[in-house]
Length: 98
Image (cartoon, rainbow, N blue to C red; front, top):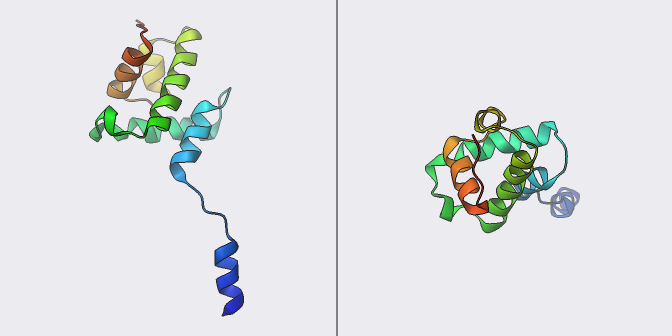
């Protein structure tokens, strides 16, 4: 019993939001980044301002990279972002795309 408790205490805690942020901040494309985009894309019921600051920063960073790579709005939405999240991120970074 005591050994079980020690094992539980020693187990690292995983912050799902931090995992999403790390994936979005990372360079390149990965399964984790695709899953993170889809998770963020599903957050349309929460107003942009209510998303955690670090998460908004990660989204802006990822969207900015996609825009710099000449991705269209449709291509970015196909990668997993919702139209609402994409629109807000573009407004925040001051960019427009076709």
